[in-house]
Image 1 (cartoon, rainbow, N blue to C red):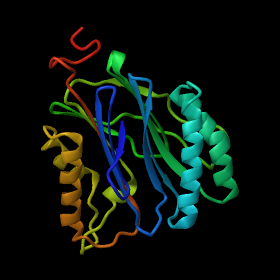
Image 2 (cartoon, rainbow, N blue to C red):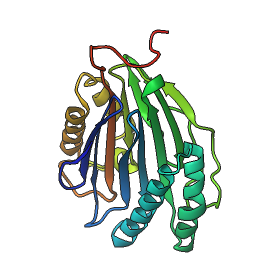
Image 3 (tube, rainbow, N blue to C red):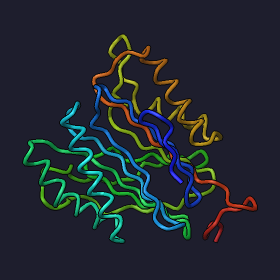
Length: 245
């Protein structure tokens, strides 16, 4: 079940995954978006994206993309088919408006503990597994430039219990302090690596507190969006699926 936490935050526990996300607009309305879309009992789709610009126009384009995305997930399509539909329909609308959007899609299937990811011009997710940090090499052209998706094939990663997946928009890593220094991906990796024992909601709070400490709570030029996924232990204290085989 997905729970709104007020403002632009949302939490979910589904298919053995804890999810927490929030979006902080730079204007009254933002162009960043994220969503958790449960499919059946054992699959979860996660999307995060960034529409060029900010304000009402970007927010409207973001809502149109979300509507198309939800329609696609009801058709039992693969991630590649979904992103092709988004490029063909949503991308055409963005192109006509002189805009574009980046997007990262993730599908998690509990049966095999398998996470599949695909990107259209968006920063890749960062996966923390024990002491290892993995950034999938998924690349693609942002929506709005072409009528058909062009990019790498989806990458699949098997998750173990306790693994953490971070998704973000560039507004987070490009947030600036009083001296004009960026928060940066390295700092994000360090704060996550030191706190993977926390649940998704707690980890989100730690990251945002660190971000606000860094920026001094200054108004930023771009929307900031953060999504955290954590693989849970199943009932009985064991992971579901093929781990250990």
